[in-house]
Image (cartoon, rainbow, N blue to C red; front, side, top):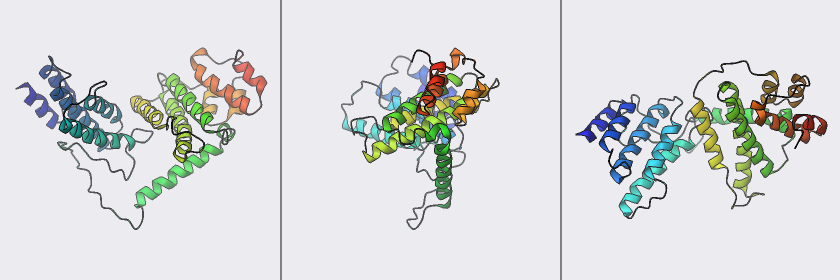
Length: 299
């Protein structure tokens, strides 16, 4: 039977072939409960292959699993069906939140594989030790704190340290747009831009969580952080194909004055408009209005 084909292929780790067999099996009714449940299993176990193998690439499959588990606009009349899907949804979402900016699972996460998963290396059993944090977690926390401290001390970040949560949200979006513009030809630099986006959205999320001064009716920043992580996952491990313009490299390093000097009085290319807007925003925050007008004459 066709249904056995996709299940067998899935157990063998032939994920693309399993998905093709699934399409053949449910060609006439891909939106049925049985079909979407099977699709969710394929995508989650595919994502588990990357997640528990500590390789980037899990995010798009986990997103596909979530969409299959809770298709837009679908309401489940069966309480049992709703409960089993919500349980699976929570398991997948927990693993998505465990991914870091590079698409890898953070150390010490409590992500659980799909019940039917057949992993080459089963995830280690977690033992709760309430006395002290695991050494790896503590090291990661120290590393993250150090990176954040370095980032916030850079000139382009220090100007906005006390700018308020909405400015931080705006910067998060601007850097996300910059990552999108850089991605096609400069994925290495796009990853650096997305790192800035995560930094600013992270500050916004912290303000929201404290409810000072963010309102509980505003976005908590979680969806924005998830979207940036997904964009990073799509980039994969590709390397940049061209040489990055000097001014963009300087801006990514947090040096707005160096970025401005590297332009040598020449207007940036239209393709890099999101980064031009960013540099103009930083110039205005630094009081360099003339430079900002040079960069964005009509703003």
